[in-house]
Length: 329
Image (cartoon, rainbow, N blue to C red; front, side, top):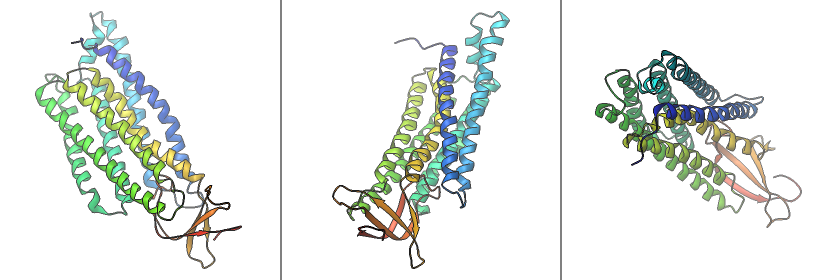
């Protein structure tokens, strides 16, 4: 069995990778704010998603700041005391204030990411509260037990692989996996149903497939990272500490990336109109090689499955497809 990497190297590599992801978060969160504001020019801004995006980015910034402070103390101040392996000794003290703060930020960031995911599930399923009962229970257990581990690590007599700490660490990670897998699967099923519904009118599918792949990809990345953390921790490999730093940044990148990728795609693909009867409608143009002229979908009743306007596609009822030549329906 290969020896475990030293803690100083694990921490340095983990924070270096997290810093790269933080750079991506700066770009993606900026684009996310643009999507949310641009989609609502002249209208009402979705304050929930906007506030959540800003909050997640603030947590990521605090995490990087505290991580930098820990690196300074571990690699500069600690060796100055002329103690052999001073950096390794410093980072082995999981109860130091900077690591404790980072662990708490990790819990808050992941909890917020889960809440956003559950909220999306709720809206995509037509605001049906019954569909989110199980994910909410999982999240309550996750949140309730997730903050116990950082508190335990504040005790200098408890090591990171202590049996008690191990138990309280595995429970929230298990619940975290359950929330992500269940919510992502239910959202995917809903979008697949909408995609099939659109295919029945023989038109191009309105971005449901692209949205579906985006959600599954984002969920798979974060879920895979959590599985890796659990595996490293159970094998008593200290590399899980660096993986937690990476996961903290991914908890911000994952939900905001969905808004940016799907939102920008919808912003450039839809046109809005009002019909002559005064009833609010949307006319969405599609081009298909089977038709020489544009095929237009006249939607007489629209229910948006995401208030974010740009986070997801639309759930549509009473759809009537009309082939139009030389004009809109």
